[in-house]
Length: 62
Image (cartoon, rainbow, N blue to C red; front, side):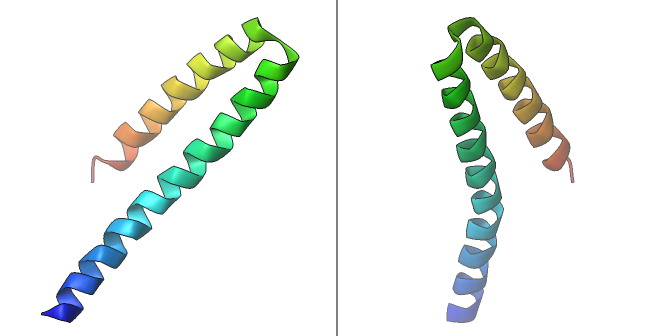
């Protein structure tokens, strides 16, 4: 029983941690671009959100 619970928790954390790292890396990239130029950061944020949405749709199919 406890092995099942720990296994499910481990799988859940393993699935979430990848997306957390991706989001944190992309947010730092957008923040650095914001320091350079506001308009470029807005375009980059739009592209990042579109690509991340496509990534989530592609990985959640299976």
